[in-house]
Length: 374
Image 1 (cartoon, rainbow, N blue to C red):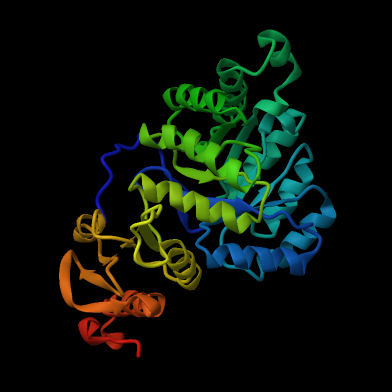
Image 2 (cartoon, rainbow, N blue to C red):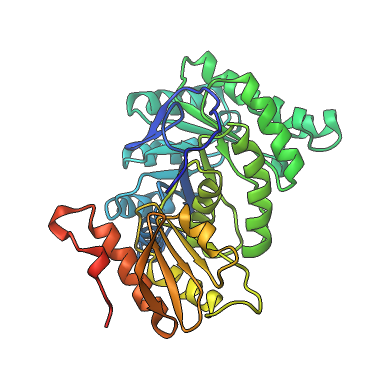
């Protein structure tokens, strides 16, 4: 029983990264970045496909050399998700990956060098309908801005971003998105707030170098949650020192928690106490793993006792409320006569979830109420 978000999005222009719209009224896109060596084509392709499997809308690939650009050509031929090439300084690499079908260029115009080189990249992007992402990072601000502000500040990040924006404006190119990332939550949040007021283009959100899987997820949820709740942000990347697949999962979890975008099962589960009548934690962990392939949005409540269980089940698509030996089962907020054996709860609940999803496809329609997992 998914609810609509009360958040009003910031108005922005819409661009396309491959076939994925970013900005405007498009869903907030979730992306990640490969951490394999790009020249290892097989490993990079395998990682991109793993990211696709968990729902990545866009994947970024670092292309630091011409050898990597040649590898990018082979990678692009073997995957379906739109690819962004991450390029610094060498404009020739940008021209080469454009030739090989890149879907977006992550390159700061001001870092390319001479005016003729900047124009060559922008003209190439325009001719091939390739958008550009301007990516400002607190850790790599221009030296004059470091001297002017003394340290990275929101105003410094904004000024850096607007320098690059001015170049694209001067060259009459408006198909771009911008990020102003920092590892400090408050610095990043305030920088994005300032940028959101200064331009109309889409914003790419991220807390850069956020940390390991747990700490990075928390920091990203806090920072991006603040911005998203204010309607700021059109695409996001969670930066974790972990498997990139986890970045996609955390990204969708953040959007799901704000009712902005749902993908897969939203488990509502109690933290457990001595009242629990079955192993709630083990049940949730097992179902999360078993149901990773599910993309249909659905609220499933798994509560270990009757204190909060019935109330949560009433507002869930499926709900289980712990009882002595057998647990109550709710479907679309209605208590069912059928009860689940606590010793076989995981199999039974998985069957019910898959059956409900299958009911949406007439060719796979199943009588949910009569589906038992004997």
